Length: 635
Ligand code: WTA
Image: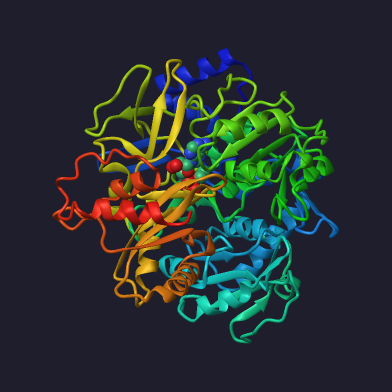
């Protein structure tokens, strides 16, 4: 098991060690894992012509580190507790032994379907145990999983399958979410019309709804599992072999396939999980994220299971059947650490105090938040009403590309400040730079958040597009990884994340590229062009605001057109990207080179009156027009 920091002086000591001798620091942590062969080189890196390798020459399998490494200690312990959407349905509990047996069986199913080391497997499942089993079965045989969030549309799924050239898809007949049923198989069928790389589609039976069946391509999960044994040897991987791809949005159109390595990701996910949440043996840990996002990968699946924890997986949503659901789950399973998001908390605050006021949750010790900046009001509510003033809050800043938590308090060890991610974890060297890339030293500074030294969990590339990796993260500031976030370091050296500085918006903790949404809007035959910006939203943090240019629409057709544009975005991407507001305008503010000046649009929706220098616009008169229309719209 990885070492755990338990005092502030311990943190300071470890941090200093990690900067003075990063390779020694990480080698010591990596030593606690099970290697078939130890590494030859701890770290080789270059941020100018970016190539990063950790533990090169090492050979291992991550599932041997989850199972074989720990089974003699806790084979009988619960690995996974699955809480269904409907609380009257039975829970599912799997011990490490049982989960291992399922993983090995499904590894054999994959092998029966000719999946080999290095092949890509797309997983489009709701939050059911089979999702964890499928991911780990891929890892067992060295296949690269690409989990696609079950809220994505057929088009988005197909785009991701095609980019990765996945061989197999794993989906379900449907999924339960609150009082809704999600027709996953139907969406997958539609996606597969345009995804010829998929040879087999393995379908989990969850909702038992009526579905179409393609006898050549579709296979039931349970019948395939009946055909196999539960012994499956692990494929021994190189440290740098990819473990998974996870698509995320960037500032340009297409989603990026972020690639994580086997060994570096493993070491980093386990180390950060254990330390940030101060996990101790026999604790019950509950992360309420969806496994379709990086938080679920690192902190429902890999981090907890590598450390032998009991991880709670929840199929449903926070307000079904009522807004006490999280608190009921915490008490039902005696949860010690709870990890959630600001949007979920704000939506529960909006439901009223009656759902939390008399609830006691004596088992809770640590509260976590992730995905977007948390406002002070939500922080205090979490602290006072959920944590009853006795649980430290870990406001964890990180990204899909970082693999694990980067800047965060260590629970109970680092004193917290509301709405601050606080201090870098050991091994993490943040720097703040101004627009020209000058490092801003000392405290009380604000600028762009970069990292100047690699950590084991850093993404290694973008699938099939290394130039995009270079351009997205390493080209803006020489020799630095740029996160895309703005940050302030206050007078105490504490970090407060200010939000994205690029054309990425964060809607309800979901990361969306404005260009991706614009492309979807522009597909509409009546749309000439569009510009999307995020606007402050009380619950979702940011909402989607679209300025749309469309010619000659009759007044009485405006609502209809808005609805059909919104529908188009849901269909092209997902309902999560649907614009909250659409404003039809005569034109967009453009520079002489034809670039849309989003800064102006952002200022309008944020009600900032200072537009800065607008003389570089080809059409400065448009600003007054936009303001006038904006001010007269119903909000
Ligand atoms: C934002 C999610 C403020 C940030 C793990 C980052 C945060 C983006 C925080 C990554 C936080 C994440 N405080 N902002 N604690 N955590 N973010 O890739 O803008 O889905 O760049 O990874 O979320 O989102 P992603």
